[in-house]
Image (cartoon, rainbow, N blue to C red; front, top):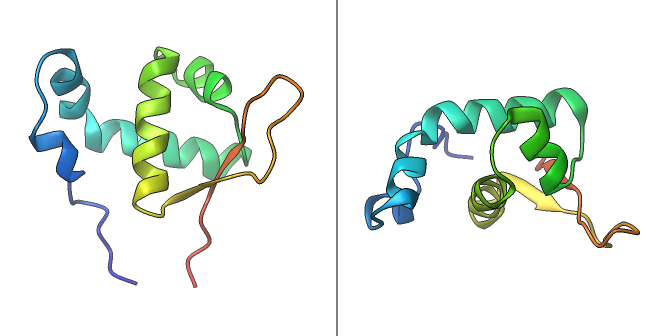
Length: 92
């Protein structure tokens, strides 16, 4: 599998405003989110946001990017509160 850990999400280049500011943090946040999932295992969006001290919409944005590029996967079922758990994709 290609190591694309230093490549930006293509969407990061084409955005503006608040999202552009969030995208500028991509490499630092990527390390924090993926490290958190590696350390604690599958987490929900609110759990990731709380652990990293970032707004839940930003945590969701990052997680969906990781899902899109097959770095993170969502659980098959939501928990009792309606949240899916996100975990690292195992590299084979």
